[in-house]
Amino acid sequence: MITSKNKNMAAASAQGNSPRNGFTLIEMAITIVILSLILAPLYGIILEQRTEKRAMQQDSIDKSLLTSLSLYLRENGAYPCPADATLAADDPNFGQEMGRTVTLPAAAQTRCNTALPVNSVIQGDLPVAALGLPFQAAANLQGRKYIYAVTNGLTGSTSYNGIGSLRILSGVTDTRVITATAPFVVVNPGPDGRGSYSLNGGPASFIQCLGTLVPPEGWAENCNNDADFRDAPYAALDMDNINNSNYFDDQIVYSIAKDESTLWVMRPDPANPGRMNMVNRNDGNIGINVPTPTAPLHVQGSVRVQDGDLNVDRRVRSRNFCYGGTLTACAP
Image (cartoon, rainbow, N blue to C red):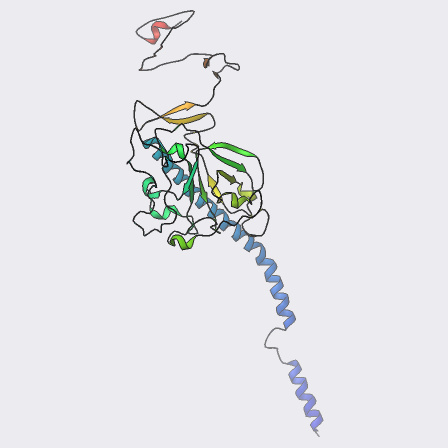
């Protein structure tokens, strides 16, 4: 005889032996933890790859900007004037030089701002129109416009001497000076865009430069309208935490490395407008295969002039002097 008690026990037993239709909360929590442990390193790798890709893109853009500035300098004997930073991309004067009254090249072109001293610094936007670049080149990958600062005297062929007055400081908070004679600087304001305008926004799109420390925070030094700028190595950048003392998302370029260096400077050729001479900045002697040169150019070995003249204003002194129609005629 089957009683109601037996029926209930049988039903309970059947339910207990039936398969479950899902996971328990504990099982789901364990699964989530395991997945997070697997995916966390992958996320870091993906983020690092994206950062490196962005840095490579920006480096390529920086090189194209330097190439354009170099070509402008070669063709005109001076650097371009800054453009009006308050103009949006749809303005007909966008990217045009401010203060440029004569179309370059011109042998007697004066600096952009004749009311200011030659060693003063003038700032604005990159003059992309004068550089022959598309309007998009005026802004970084986040759409914030570059800041372009240049030594006033280097914007005119009549005052150009190749020696700038911009000072580049090393690192985010360091006081070391990389150079005190940079001719120009192009500042990429980074994702936060401090001190810059947006490409299409006009005056209302300006993001204030809000540095409050003395001396200013690293990023603030690049947007406070003075002659000092900071260059921090990529490894030192902290672009994730704006409240971190090492926060710095700017990238700057300040030298046409292929054309100028600490030893050589480009200067206009007065006899050939539009051409540039490479002039040595060194006041001492230059030695070639000579450890201690005793003349402005001291060479140990042979000097050859091919298909040209060797002009000497005074005397030529030599222990042996040979003249012949061919090189073999003067062979030892």
